[in-house]
Amino acid sequence: MAEKEEIVTKEENKAAEQPTVEKKKGNKTIMMMGIVVLISVGCAFVFVSKVYPSLTGNVASDALVPENPENEAAVETAEVQTVKQPETKKEPASSSKKKEEKGKEGKEGANKEESMIVPVETLIVNLSGSNGRRYLKAKINLEAKDGDVKKVIEAKSIQIKDRLISIISSKTLEDIDGLEAQENLRKEIKDAVDVVLKVEGVLQVYFTEFVVQ
Image 1 (spheres, rainbow, N blue to C red):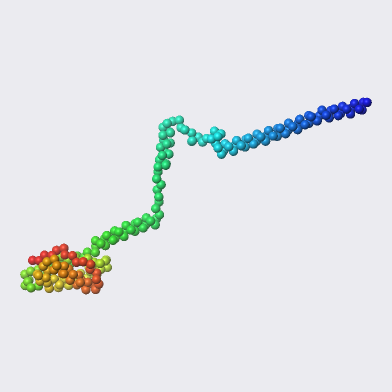
Image 2: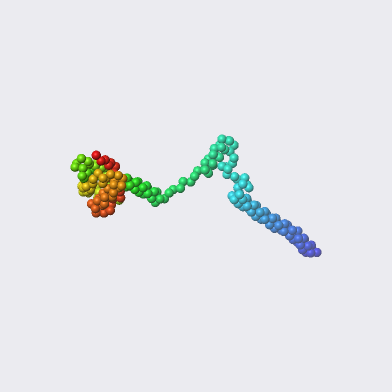
């Protein structure tokens, strides 16, 4: 009987211990789940605070509205100036060089146009058939075709002057009287100078003084 009672007591003790063990296991499981939940919530909070700082209140200090109205006006002015400042476009070096070259070419072209007129020394020549009583005083200018022709005209100025004296001295008063006569004289002088130059380099002949006395 004593043995039976001991067996019954052991079984009762085991039965009493089993709920305690199960309770401990349940408590451990709940604690683990709680820890996991806390870690998850903490990670989520850190992620949200970095990605969306406005949701957690971590807004940058410079984004706050300044309390001082003067500072606020200064900030707004700086922002407006930053927006309105035009972007300066840098021109490539090649384009600036081209502009400089064009400017130089334009100046050289203008100088060439101005310097193509070659003046001849003033001529005073007795007219034919006047027995030395009538003479022509003329200032003649030759328009050269280009710079090379100008140089040739200047180099052969003596030959050209001699040729012009011969032409004018052969003219009578009637030969040079009137616009048509003067136009014919211009053409004759042009042809004579071209012969001396051995090239058609004279574009026009101008009289800056034409006096008969």
